[in-house]
Length: 203
Image 1 (cartoon, rainbow, N blue to C red):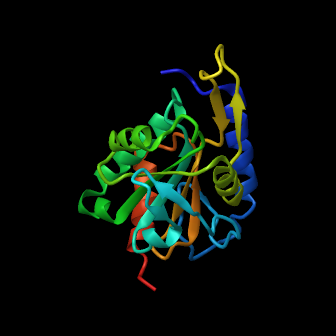
Image 2: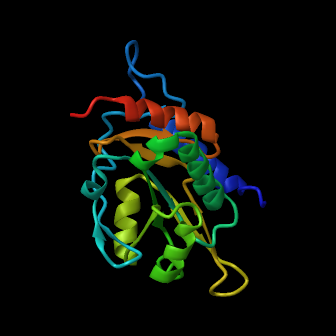
């Protein structure tokens, strides 16, 4: 597996450092493995289409703990590793896995056609959802979730790669953004965080 680029690692650490500033909660609060960003004022909206062309918003995922990751299907390392880790974490949850929704947001609508996107996310779970939009909609979604991404030219016009924030966001069953999970946190730690959110009382 190709190691993440230095630029990608630095952007991830920078994002984690920025988000860590939001982690101001002490005593009595859950001890998460990821960065606690409860109360953050971003990541409130998401309006894109799934691979079947159906409009989707965050409201569609209420009732489930939702893990959102921004990437692209031709990503050589970070994206498949992250989605596989989420799939493994869900497996560790047993029956509770049904209450966890994986959402993959494409940063490459040019190449990630609905067909490509649907086949890709299906590799990690039959109920994983892939979302895509126009270039403008993609930029808006990335901005709302404070996701950095930048196209890196390749040897040919279509062989470019994309540097992007390598962490995932976790929303609770009420649709509130709660955690930033760093890249490669580990399936066991991710599962532990998901268990905490799943155990919270319904509003």
